[in-house]
Length: 66
Image (cartoon, rainbow, N blue to C red; front, side, top):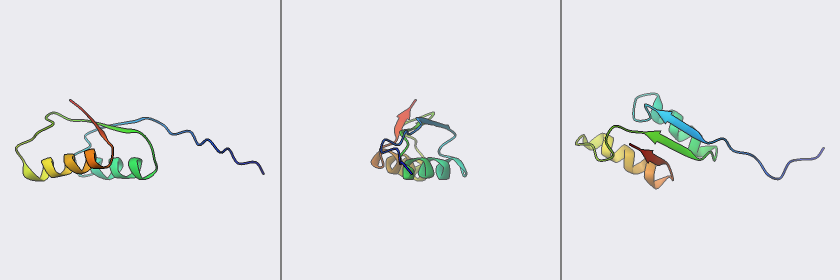
């Protein structure tokens, strides 16, 4: 059996990535090595929890798209 050494990764765009289900989709996408982007309304929200979530996305290599 021949294994392809170059595993192709899909580029993933998550709309609603800061929501209840979306944040888990983002985490799974990053964990599986896919280049991941999240569409956000505000890259610097006033809500502290949402701001921390976006920071964790950025720290894990997720691109934020406003």
